[in-house]
Length: 179
Image (cartoon, rainbow, N blue to C red; front, side, top):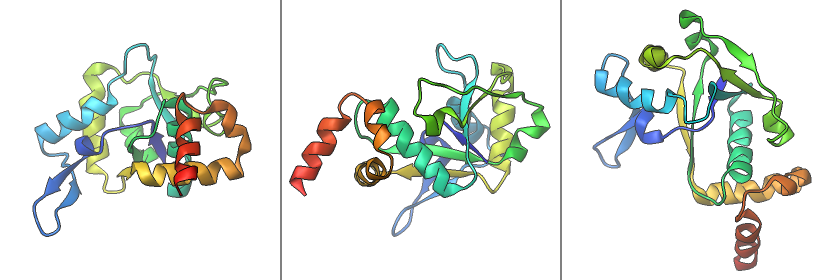
């Protein structure tokens, strides 16, 4: 599986009325759904390729998402990410290149890859392939869980402290004191 760096849960899923309301995956056959998902797949300003992180399973994906959030974001907020099966990349013959990064915590830096040839005119095709694969998962770690997971992770990986985002040390200290 590939972990798409970050996404927006509302782009990959939609709310269905009910009691309680629930979220369902968007459809590859809906042009509106494909367009919504494509917004998360376009390269962002300054990117050479779409960053993804290679993960083996959902637990490793959660770990990567938490580490990304606490080291690459200034403060806590919900973290949305998408797990994309390898097979979704093959039909488009996209080039995936290892791009290890020393700017990221080693857990992320060693798993960092880029989809280097995902041209803007192919993004919707890629979105359609992903949406057509029932195995993709759009996931969210809510802010409260993120802070708890961050605290646990710092206990296991003390070297994370040197990579923390701007406000994270104060946030973790304040929330520890409040507990």
